[in-house]
Image (cartoon, rainbow, N blue to C red; front, side, top):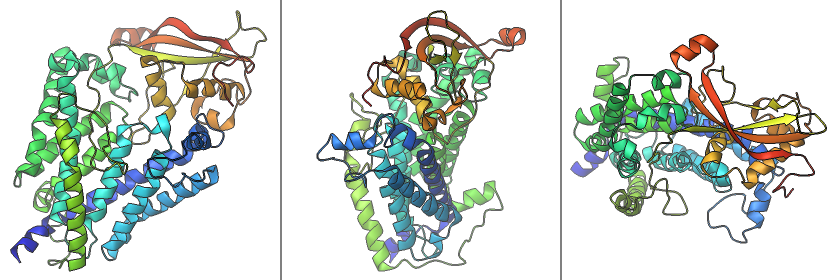
Length: 485
């Protein structure tokens, strides 16, 4: 049947391999991040304990395995299961069996990680969480090595990339003036949440080049995504442009797995002949012949296609709405969401610095500064490359001055420092008290900017900072506002 031959896409086997193994690798990173950080942030004795959160709602709207019971041991079991399943998928083992095997494996990752996200509160309130969930659900229907890749699912993955890129582009055009007058990158590299090793060099580039960068970004996000649905090789070229722009973002910043998942998903539009032309080592014929699609698998993939097409109505309407939402889900399963961020760019970098002292009285004390793994602190330190790993505490520290330092989790964090809580201290790069408990802690607000080349030659500092004020004065265990535990 002609329509069945259209449904099978044997010329996209390389794309399927990249999509399945790449998305599984990002799930591995996500579960590893949760295993290392979730107990300290949200565990039984965390900053925002899940048992308290779940207990406050007699009926949780979003699905999670922790609805009835949470324990740190159960969380670790969920993460361990996710790590094992994702590692098997990266190795390609489930893909060797019938198509239902990788389907079950990816749906398991989707459900396990959704259980974590849905109780993660503010620490999991990032757009790339729902992006990973949607990607995991969609690539689950790409089948196995025993069948050809289903074309409708590849198109839906391209549709996901379109929403991600075009949605971000529209948010920028409708957002701050700096995106329209091409000055956004005068500030972005310096003020982004977590700079990388090359961010300072990117910031110090000539301003005309920054304007060219913004123009290139608009072209890559507002024009190129439409060509993902064009015939080959145009679709592959469009995917290549998206991949190239995302690699620049990887090199110049730390946005967890946001840029990496965009790169992986863009391969849905890259055909085997184009991939082989670029890298001859990529084979043109993976299976030595056309794979026949079983009727039952055809029915499953068409049902999944119909579901995702129907759910596309709401994000499609949102894309062209004057009140466009960003990073929003329209259903409890977080499928076919709307994406887009950084509609405005922060002009100044304000950093929250936490200090402690062992002195009896806080006045005229010798204060020592806590060091974070990712966020700027030490003026000489080169920012590290962390992406695709997600440092959740560091990210929320960036948001504090944009909102308020008087948040429940932050006061809980100060209390954990006063207790010298081991789990909390492991989230930091530097504990000035080597595991000991300070008598007092305080919070100071600084303006940070990248040092010029001349300033760097004279001082060796990569950052220049100016003290602004003290939003939270010295507090002790007996005088910690907002402590509820």
